[in-house]
Image 1 (cartoon, helix red, strand yellow):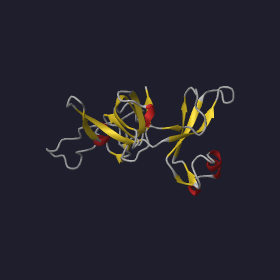
Image 2 (cartoon, rainbow, N blue to C red):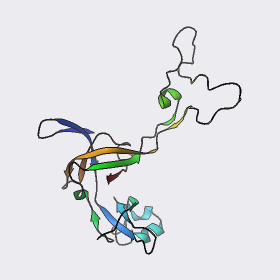
Image 3 (cartoon, rainbow, N blue to C red):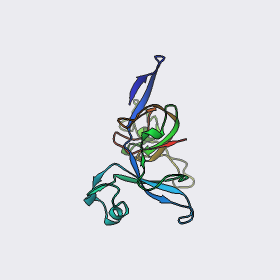
Image 4 (cartoon, rainbow, N blue to C red):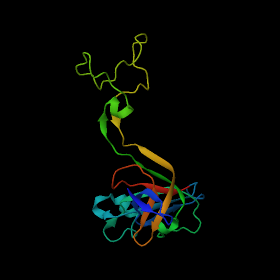
Length: 196
């Protein structure tokens, strides 16, 4: 994350995203597949690290002995789009409303204090080692744990969408986007940026 000053001297916080150009790998039409969409490939990695099926699917598009880092399909009207076309940051303009989707940071198995914000037990008066324990989990009548009871467990690593963000700045030469506010994931996370 970083910050930038606008023309009036007002500071805006935002997240800088490296948006490398994407290439259209496949188009789907209503007549053949029943809906319209485009599949795009982004980034690059060695071709030997992907299956033969994927190499055949993207043959001639990723480059010699190369493969795309990620393939993603977006439902949209095709218009003039065709296989081999490049999509880059020039499709965005400053002020565009966007939705950013990505995987949140995975934090592993966490207790109820960190995962759900429980206060824990008292820190004095005979409390020996139950400061961060969940406490009672319900009545004794049904003699079972109700579904949905908040307990310790795996935290993070979920698909999160952040809405009502906007583009603060577009750097077409370096393929960079400055997006207002925070977005999900750690550094290096692959995110989807979709115009609203």
